[in-house]
Image (cartoon, rainbow, N blue to C red):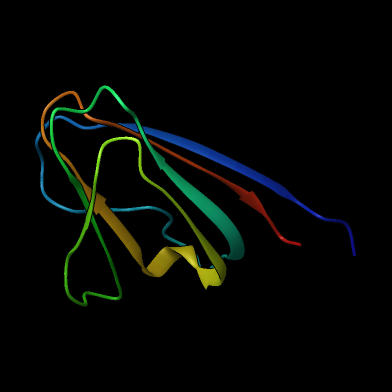
Length: 86
């Protein structure tokens, strides 16, 4: 089976939580918050508790269904998600 590469970028408009993907997609991904963000981004898995993610923060999630991952941030905050099916 081939490895698939995944990349997605968010620029938030101050809305509530956004679902990363709508269809079940199991990947290993790294979340990277911009160092220029003025505050934390929040993420949660499957409606669980909020996790504060500071400017410049990076975290790798292994073999996670990213359709259960939700993210939110203040107006103008940036978040990149990169990874793949390895």
